[in-house]
Length: 551
Image (cartoon, rainbow, N blue to C red; front, side):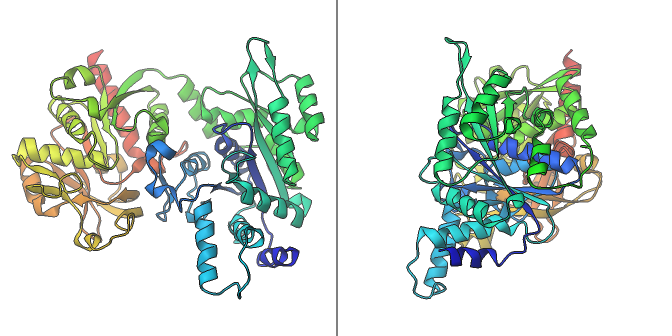
């Protein structure tokens, strides 16, 4: 086993340092936010860092998962369907991720099985150790090999003790043993619960979690403690003593009012300095966080409020629209307003109650999605926004609903629909391209990743972007049917953005409306703290103007 392990690591030149973030006690503690915060602090000190997520589920990627199961499916520039934590990584670091930044158990096993079928193991019995763990290690080291990054941070999904996570933890153990001590660091995130009845913080869950991790052979260098109440020195000393770490390596991660505060909290706790000392990084500067602090100041001290209706069908789970909600935060800060998101389930909207459901809103966003459920409610909401001159923004399916609504109620094509919902639609204004129809594998028909869009200068889209050429990320299967394009233009719906290579419609808008725009792509996937998505910024600005008119 040792010989094979070394042969895998011998493939790499160890230019980067590696930090692994594990979790214990409970899920959803915020490993992704801690990883992103540490990366942000290192970046602010002039150290190049990237983050990757290793997920223990057997799905190859989240592309076919129901949003209720896993939240939003985040899409990278190169078209990878990934975990939503990659969105946090990009929003914090303002740098794109890729296929290499998200790996699942399914992808690991798929790769190993394909190698076995191709005879690459020369008849050996294929086992979890060394074959699966070798493939995990290969993926873990991959991003650190092109001299692009000084530090690679790897978040291990799930919690210590999960059966699914064991091969990943074993791979970390091997790396921690095989590489020089100064090249590897393990950060363990845990929970310190506060018992209100006893008015006491309890460290026992953390002790058990660290003991369980240590039993696998992985020893944490830093313990980050999520807590509702401050940790005093006595508690930190107790955790350090029983978990066998130095007291200054016990980090308090107090609940924050916003995730964007966490980097500054970790700066106060000196997490970045502890990491640099452990990894023997001696060349760095004072952290440059001026823009970050400026954003936080605007976020915490808004000068107004706008009410935005989010029309969707997964509103019970906020993570289903995570990037949209974060984009509202970025755009709100830019406009110095608090964006109050009013969730409206599209299944509950009817022609009879739409006035009541959407009353008091300053803007309306119809969210992306798949499937027939709640579609008519979305169409009714679009009609309300169009007729009442309410700022409207449709993303992907939301744009398609705007097209269908316009076709039915303005052009007069009463049977207009998408073939996704009605394969026999009388007027299939949203359709699948011919070459897509021949592909049978689910996901194979999707247009994924970054595609170019040429923008008409005489348009709202040009005012928003200030350029005629943009690249935006896509995740959809159905398109605007260009056979009906002339009818739409004749009745006043402008096609202001097209894919220059295929002629596919990317942006539609109504010039005689204060703000009415639909886009086939997902601008929320590129919005970051330092570079908010322009279309969200302008949408919130239009909503702000709408709110001022009502005041």
